[in-house]
Length: 602
Figure 1 (spheres, rainbow, N blue to C red):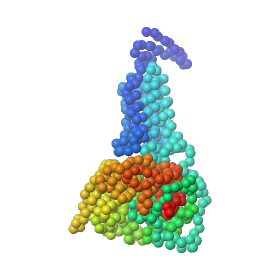
Figure 2 (figure 1 turned 90 degrees about the horizontal axis):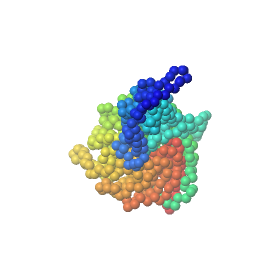
Figure 3 (figure 1 turned 180 degrees about the vertical axis):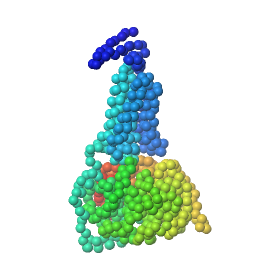
């Protein structure tokens, strides 16, 4: 045994003894850290963090592991340090207290967009992951120096998040991260609007609008029947470079609304700072015809800011639903507000996790939306002229699907799919005709669709996937019986279309075709992320807008996945539904909107 005496700057002596088992300094025995547990925990942390990148079919289990796995393994690292690391008592106490302090300071100074998923997917994995990795690398430093190094690297790991901001998550649960000081697309849009005024409307132009509004080409979310089908259009497949040159491309505010179209008028919703904005664009130029704003901003850490619903054109009025629940009737020619209702007050509830997303449904003199309030305040119907509440019916408290007017079992009914059940309602008085229990472990987003007159298809990313129901009515008694359920098509927020006995849509992030007869898979190909699809029924063509902004034309063929044409349209995360009118394609996302001319067949 040897003894070494060192003199510190203050003149005091520190005694250090070397032994076979470690070093003794000031009574503290420094031993090599036990490394096999942190090696396993760091591997588990990294593997769970990037698990969602390995699977294109994201089940609820995989998503939960991807979200909470890094936190669990991070906590295990801290428990290892505290109880099984062989660190000295002083190291354990100082290490734990400092990690908690570093984490608390980081959470206090990070951008608010990083709160929630940003912390779970970036801040905690980086901070505690580097804590564990550095502890492994410094295990054989037999002094307090190793703790100092571990804490300095941990500080960098946590603190790096303070340099970032998040613009929500992509379909694979990866965050859209940017440097905090780089302005967002919304910031640039607002900066470019200083002093900008709307186009002055002439009486002649307004009179033209009357003609457009009598027969709008695409009056509501996913079309008049909300089934994503456009009739009378067949596209040529010899797309040249001119196709990818936009007729116009403009910056827009964030939001997941699609377009509704009447003649040369495009209606949509977007967020502009603290103002939720309804916009009417000129379809020829992309210029604003008018805007209307209310002081409201909804944002969630997954989807980001902005309205979710799509405007509805009906009865010479325009109806919109905001993310915070403002149901508004406007004059579509000028943007003037006719009436406004706050669904939060009517239904006595706060916005659900991803906001109010119900695209208004107009049936005769009523405008119908889902609210998810308690008791009978689930689905609400208002007078289109006055905004007076006419009826309400019970429904599940969460849904990002919209009410849909369908004809089934020989009658027109309102179908409302929620996290709890499928409701069929009498549109005149809201009487519940059928409650089919179909509780979801996740969230309901896609539209219920009718096939073969007496069958309804409902979809869910979790649970049973897609279910085909047989609806019967006898002596005013409505019944629903499950014909089949298929895990081969598990739509999340990506609606499917139906063509000649087959369903085409997104099974997770891969495009898929299944049989309508038995739900069996025909093929599964086409990695378009969490995109959206339109059916051009006359030509048997599928127009897909991918999550990365690519436009893809597919053949609606159950025998094979066949790409006919493709080009890149817009940049950024694209979840919004595309719209095609004649040879004009209109697309948008949370950053850009654009119009393209597509070649027609003959």
